[in-house]
Length: 274
Image 1 (cartoon, rainbow, N blue to C red):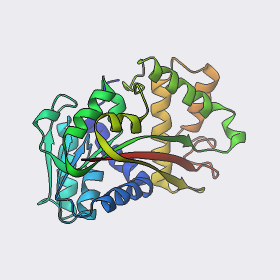
Image 2: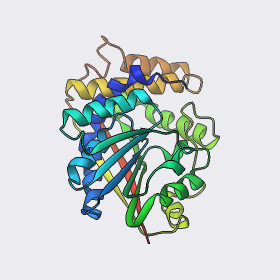
Image 3: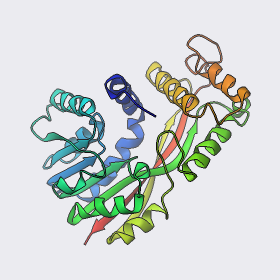
């Protein structure tokens, strides 16, 4: 699935701000693990939301935001400058995993939603771990619980079928977004990479009804992406239901229905370099 990052970048920022109550908890937990960190790598940084938050949480650290998209890195630079962090948040363009060998080591390495897109997730974790300084922490944000957004009576099993289609395509290495199953669970891969003190923690995004406009728009974008990616793997009935839920004007749309909510969870797996 080809993505236009210049076009999608502002939506990534908007979506990241909606998810911030969940992700900021994870980043605060991570920063608390190593409060004296002097250097941070954010691998697959996108528009720099996490990179800037880590710079705020770790005022003694320099943060390097790494991504393959120059358009997203430009947004990261703009965000850092706007927050007064331009002197501590830098960017570097590098494709992952190929560009990892050219990166400097760091006390904190944050990798959010990247490892399951790599051709060999186990090798990717080993390469991430090699970038962590002794005593530093590698954190992988991977997995959790999938999205729920409408009551059961309005769902009718649709989201279970969406999740099943995503899981099946991921297992077959045929997902449009390139997601694949890791060969073992993430904590096992962290240990195999030589890391110790492996811990996992899950953080909740709980936005109850009624949603505000930014959350509704983010939800509509997420469901439209699912419809586009899974159009060949869902029934016509399910696709028609997604069209209703993502309509700009219809009363069933998540933009308008009073009972729409956002509930999901994200898990962060961490290990320490000995």
